[in-house]
Length: 341
Ligand SMILES: C[S@@+](CC[C@H](N)C(=O)[O-])C[C@H]1O[C@@H](n2cnc3c(N)ncnc32)[C@H](O)[C@@H]1O
Ligand code: SF4
Ligand code: SF4
Image (cartoon, rainbow, N blue to C red; front, side, top):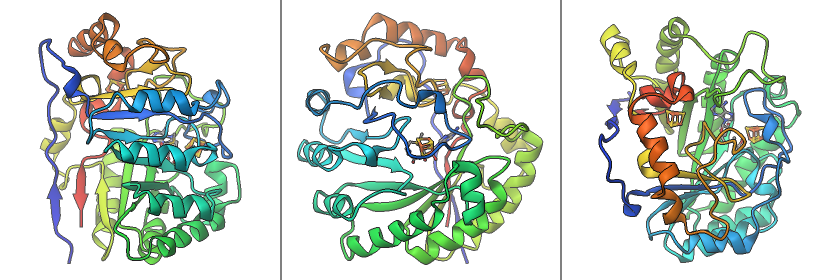
């Protein structure tokens, strides 16, 4: 029988005074290349700029405090970066907590051995469909079997090592939610540690050409219906820890509570660095053509993080005046917060 636990949702701090030591989460995008074209992704980013050069990566990472959480993904597929394992090794020797999301359809055995050897902290494998057909329908490629086979291989190569923790990531959309029970069965069978469901983000952009005509986003009415069935499915898991983007019960009070804006912590403790060195405020506003807060190629990370452009973005966020935040699930604590299991 599963128990339900709730992680605290913290509220964004008010007033000025952000310090460099507040920077806890750093995303360094290694590449915008990808072998898939997921219908929920921002495919307009594809090949927009070159891969992150190794020396630039080392320069950035050398400025971070030990213990900082470092993600190596952005809007592309990290396993396509030639230097991936070396860059993980470098970041780990600096005492950082290192992880990344991957579609894991083309990862090699050598890479997997490298993840274990250098004690990558987490590997987050994306899986938003439970069948070949549904996978091809959202990703544009018939690679579901390859994904499952590689995930199994990763579990075998990890063996008795505690790292990397293996988390599956499921993007919740109108098209994907019915796939959730089948995905639970796969991740339990393969031997993942966790399954995280995250709400669809619209990137603060109009719908892209790959997105289905009825859109990927679920509305509040659908969300209520979906969360009941998904919560029940989550409770059927016996081995895997499941993280859902819903409060644990279905009362209206919970819904009202989550609809209060101002819960996003990104402007105060996290930073997104694109493969061409631009700093943007968050994963949702990841496109430097929409907004850049400066570059960290040749300029210290701290100077950008504490600089006037960043502070003016924070002020706008505090006043709830950033357009993209108005429809962003992260602003309302609806992205990923609650554990079941
Ligand atoms: C943009 S991808 C990059 C890493 C890698 N290519 C992958 O798919 O895992 C990072 C994560 O965002 C998820 N994702 C993609 N589009 C999304 C969207 N519109 N909303 C929420 N998550 C999304 C992916 O499933 C993946 O877990
Ligand atoms: S979600 Fe990942 S795998 Fe899918 S198109 Fe985007 S970057 Fe590629
Ligand atoms: S709420 Fe705003 S700042 Fe936070 S992730 Fe969403 S768009 Fe970015």
